[in-house]
View 1 (cartoon, rainbow, N blue to C red):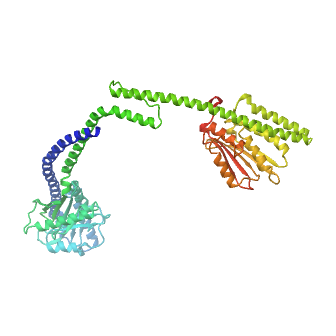
View 2 (view 1 turned 135 degrees about the horizontal axis):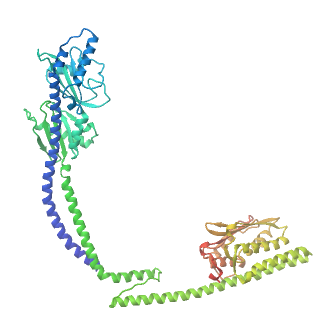
View 3 (view 1 turned 135 degrees about the vertical axis):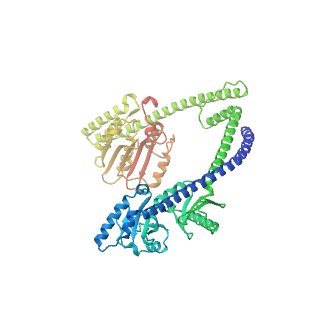
Length: 597
């Protein structure tokens, strides 16, 4: 029912929101595309204008240098010695540095050079001239022979002076003697390509690229001067070049922006007045409609939010109807999983309120019943533990008295007295003032007394070593858990073996639990018997057949007191001795005797 209410409400609200969103998107997209297109064209137009202005100013500056009277005089001189030539170069350099327009172009133009046919060389910058004679270069001959301005595309390093590696564009004009009209040399100005790249990058912030086309319509890419272009960008630039080339007219229209457009890009270009180069800007259509995409994304987001809100409202409406039943169903699931402490409450007086009250009554009765059963089982467990204690004590007493009687028959009075003293200590600890839970320290003293008694009788059969870590001495444990295992090791392992054996008892802490390891070098047990005994020791059993009741009683006591993870395990091979391990699981450990007895 809840899902049906949510579905109907959501469909109704979402339909209205989607219809409104689509209409709004269509109207807004048209307006934004028109504005974005105009803005993109304007940015490219600004770049074209800035580059055209820079080139024009550079040309005018070269013309101003040609008109300088002092440089006109220097270019008319003839030199009879290198000393006169060197002196003329110094004079010309000083004149170049004092040009009135020097400060205005220094930021954008790397350098201006006047190179005479007579060998004179004058520069506006501090860099040293190249050693090669510029008069023998191709660019010098081209400027000199044509007699008109020449523009040279981006090239590495200066044509004239020594510089760190950088890119620049050069313009050269012939130096004309104002008196005779003869060409006396050339004037060369170099513009750092970095300046053109800055202009291109400003236009490229809109996602496009700016490049130059020479008089033969070859690409001179400005954006590539500062950043690598992907193959996609290079393809776009080549397509733009072809579009411009196809649109060119026989008579260039200088300073006029032409706009070309196809399905993938917008191209804007101008023809430079001085260089007959074309400045071209290309912008992908995807960048122009980016703002339109934002509106599309925003519309989708608004629709998604509206649908989400409608679903949330529908959820609240449905929840007010179905929540009480859902809470009761969840509580029943918890009861089925074993949690009887779950509780539900409601102020309602209708049928749902009756169900809540019935559920509360049911869980209360179940808790009472389980508590009663637990108390009865606890009493039964305590009685089982005390019965196991009573079984072990007569068994040990019988074997000990038998050992003392045997010593007396051998007229070993002194040894018998020592054994009786040890037996007295043994029973003091065994009685423990009526306590059935003692410390591990007391249990070790108990075992030590027992070993003293048996070692007197069977000293020729075994020696023993008792090693206890101090950390486990305060551990609480049922009494008489080690002595029955030691007794079995001596009577069933060491005594039947040939020669003298060894008994090693180690009590230690492992992974937060207490372990008792009893190892003998006796006759051992066959693998089949070991497997059978370990299987019988996995659970508590009142059946006394099979495994000796001493080991079984110890195992049962450990499982009763410390839980099913505790108990006795045996490792043995025939003829190689036996290892018996007692695990006292700390998490089920004893805090005081009243917890169990």
